[in-house]
Length: 203
Image 1 (cartoon, rainbow, N blue to C red):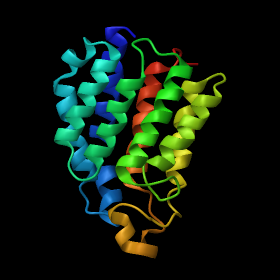
Image 2 (image 1 turned 180 degrees about the vertical axis):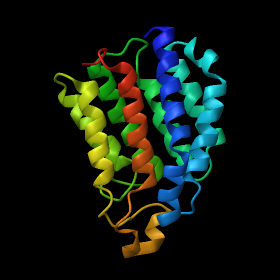
Image 3 (image 1 turned 120 degrees about the vertical axis):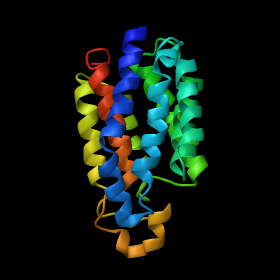
Image 4 (image 1 turned 30 degrees about the vertical axis):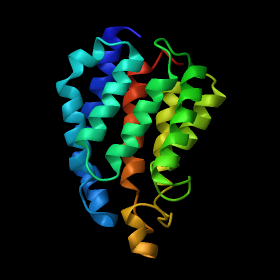
């Protein structure tokens, strides 16, 4: 991956989260403590501030630094979970990953997020987006960069009727039904942003 592509990839993810701060906050106000948008924004503002350094590093090192920044800057449960996701991707991805490499690395990262959060798909969390995206990535085929955002968006919408089992939303019990999970939504935003930059490279 060229430094320019890596710069664009990191910028797109950070700017998407920052642009959707209010959307994520609104979702979290409904079923959480209302800080997901602000926490994610703080983390990705720190990432954006270091973007020239991150873009100049080999991809694994950049992902490790990005994940470490999220652990340090994003509060609540989201920091450790997103940090675990990116740091595990850093361990598993080569500097020039193929689609197969990306699918295998995301599978490992999902396993690490499951262990960190003690959660499984179907419990109204970010995993409900990451798992179907990984499955679509592993199946491969054409136009992946166009198809994956749609997979992620549909998966995020599928959390609306779910009853939260993990996270702060689980405290609401049945009242968590009828709202999209904020972590699933932020995951879908990140998938769309990354694919927007990589379109063509992984199609």
